[in-house]
Image (cartoon, rainbow, N blue to C red; front, top):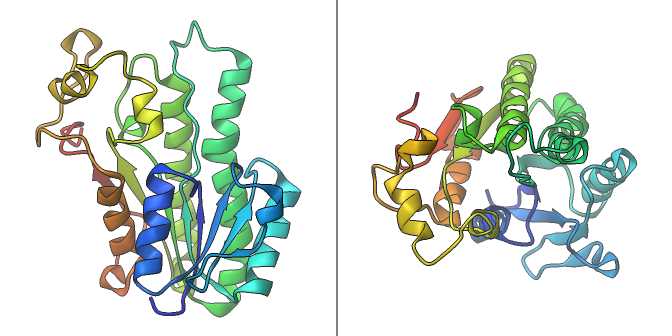
Length: 252
């Protein structure tokens, strides 16, 4: 990946940060984007040949300007990894319209806009790889997670459809679907010191299977899966959804 320009969203922490770090370690020039960055940090050199950018992925014009800026600052984008995401837990009866709209805006619509914007530039070059970080909740029902699960399912299927459309141009589109991963988002669901053990054990009363491998994932576990899918080692893989959940969904 030496010299390849890679765009990664949601890089201020968690999985996004791990993906950006892993790509840098392998020589990619990373355009790391997150709305948590300070506005005066736009285009700041990261010391590894890449740059950091403040970006709200829900703003259409900002997305267009960001992609144009990355190609101006760093060069043609070869890799896009959609990681930015939000979680608004709650049953369908409890969810507000704002919760639903925010979930779709960040987890699905932003993936559509950014993928479309980058793909339009990849097509003439007939090369590129796009990975969307989804969730295993997109594949099985989760009580209290309807907005999150629905938005991640939308993003995953969008990515598969995009992969079909871009295959004639040699551009691959795949999904990585994590299960419970040790991030701030995961920890926001914990209620006490026994919460990690409860996640691993599962909750039959909520129809939730535990984690057969007996551990919660590290962000690096997800980053490794992303690295594989964007690398030449996966050159014949597209429209694939790689679950990285320790077996928690029993791949149902």
